[in-house]
Image (cartoon, rainbow, N blue to C red; front, side):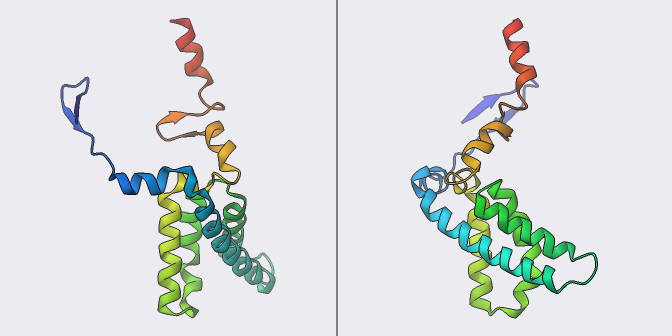
Length: 153
């Protein structure tokens, strides 16, 4: 599929494989993502919270971020970014786990980041994403100016 842009250059649009598209974008897989999300979120919440309890003084920013990422995953709020941030922050905590556990945790993070549109469907993302918008269109909260411009035409 090719389409012409205003500059005259051609842009190629490569479709996603059907199996991958169905697994990542079908809301019927939402219960699977919910289970994965809650387990990973609980691990991060517990790890971050226990680390915060042991921190003296101002607290540990890594533990605070991990705790917030765990809460966001459990609630299903901005699941893709929360999984990415939590995955990056939890790398330091994975040293004590064995190689199979690290591999499973890494795979869970990658799948949640890829399935960001449907991973939070049973959660706050069901209402939050349409309000905030998705990368290809603005949401209700941020697209008001362009609606006014369209109505003037």
